[in-house]
Amino acid sequence: MPSSNKSPSLLSLNFFTIPNASLLTNSFLFSSTLLLTSFIFFTKNKNKQQKAWFLTFLTSIVMTLGSIPFLYQLIFNANWNVNNLPSESNLSIILVGFFMTYCIIDLLLSKFFYENENSNITSMKGYLHLVYLVLSSFVIYNQRTEIFCLMSIFEASTLVLATEKINNKSPKQDLLYAITFVSTRLLFHAIMIYLYFNYHQSKSIWLILSFLYPFHCYWFYGFIRQKVYARNRQRKLSQYNKMFYSKKELEEALNSIQPKPIHYFLEKEENDSEVEERRSNTLFTLIY
Image (cartoon, rainbow, N blue to C red):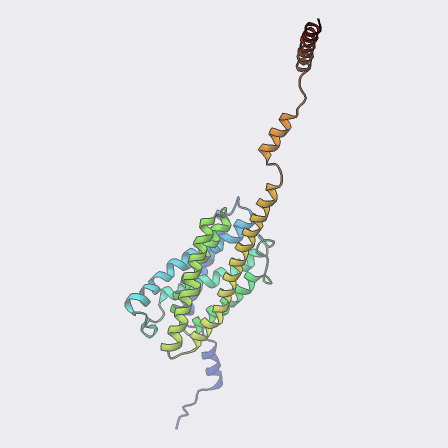
């Protein structure tokens, strides 16, 4: 009678088998070519900060646009029922492969091109890249890449932030960043935690989403704290400046005390002599 048990070697082989390996390989090759070519071509005359945020800017565009079909399916096709979401597709696998390639390339380029700006693996961004690489590997192995793509709507706030870093900041961009961050990384994230906790059989996705949520709260707290500090600093600076002359007032004050030309004093002396002579004549008339 043949044994139904699988051999240990076969089990270990299945454990290390990567689902959709050929599609992922093609995604890695295409993504690395696209990212490296774009980086070399578009960052020739850029400073370190612009170089450090260029790949983030490009990746956030791709992932934000790529998340729209999955968000549409959740809202309109599945009617917010996470159990009715379609399974992973070629698009979701390609997008996850693209994001993993970005994390790896950004870590490598930071060592050579913008180490001071976005320094290295020990930096905060380096740790985040490693965390997302682990999460990407998890969804690939469990064939749940569609969920990763659905949650990639988070990158909308990253797109705004990267735009601010590449260009000059403005208050409107800060407000737009706050709106996109709250609507995606806080509100939408909280909704997805609730849906997966109450209506989905597997709790692993709920645990992962719950694990990431405190990070988003902490980042937004840091953003608010930074804005409050900048506002208080600007207010103190304006109060300090009021204690002294402005540049225009200082120029006017200096002009008012500039030395008079010599003819001014000669004319003044002649006028004083005439006044003195009139006073003497008046006094003589009164006496005599």
